[in-house]
Length: 403
Image 1 (cartoon, rainbow, N blue to C red):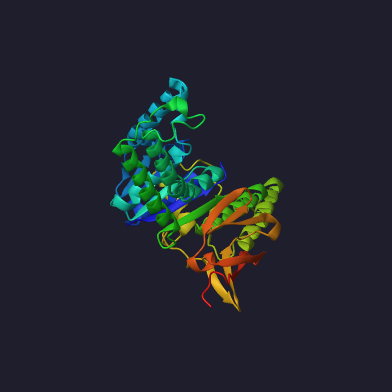
Image 2 (cartoon, rainbow, N blue to C red):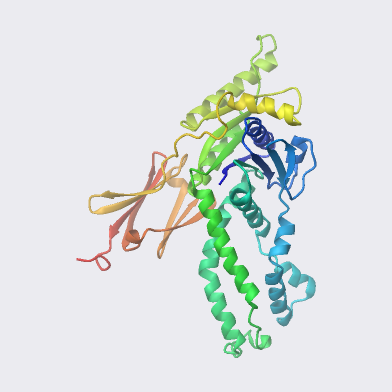
């Protein structure tokens, strides 16, 4: 299977250029490469200088590109489900246009984009698949979706299925608010099959994104204080969801002059201060630099120039050893769950226990962490944040552990 590289960053920093330049260099060095965009802005086609569609187009020998058409794939894959939901809503008295809107699954386009990426990685003849993601906020939502929806499908769908069986046999007809529905038709086998396929596909996507040997995220930034601050927050959220950042790309770095231009010298000095902050903040993560150019790097020759500047003689697929992963440690009579969370303090993290799950919230992003079987039989007794990691302490529950 192919290696997967995801490029993201604040809007306008040049993530599309970085992704396209990386793909162009990989192909130039003999790696069969697909570069695709999940960004609805369609900037990838502009960078390559060729029109793109939903199927791979050969741009150069060894390099193909496509623009994900999430809406088209969604409509093809989920028409059976939408038809069934529309029938249920019609029986409940919901009009045509409103029913059409209500049968669109929130986040469906993002889910389909991820499934498209998964398919290309698993089934294509590629050595590498390079993804030009949407700007940071959309990318974080995109990468969090497989885990969140898997939880929803696993937890909610069995309950929904039992309810539908009861409705179909009229068992709930006497309940307030349901009498008007009458006997609700059981979903056709295609609907149940679609839900089952979704659960399996989401599991595949989760496994792909969480595999540090296969998948890496590359953060693109410009050396400006607000951009660097957002990159730090992005790094924290990616760590929360278990995604690996294997490189930081600093784009549009103003080259030093001879000192005669005060305006340029001031820019260079300001950027160098930010680059020093990046090196300190992202210590252990390779920093790739691309100078500010007097022209837009459009087309393969210009993109290859950027790629060579970014990587020099290095292999663009090379990654440093994976960073520390979540782990459980024994500490006397207690256990400690350690989760990497760079750039955080205790005030940034909210923590709660819900049955067999730990609810971790950082900066408005929430993750449900399913606890290992041993920790499920423990009481949560404390937590702290230090050294870029969350440490949650557990004590065995005497009522659940064998004496």
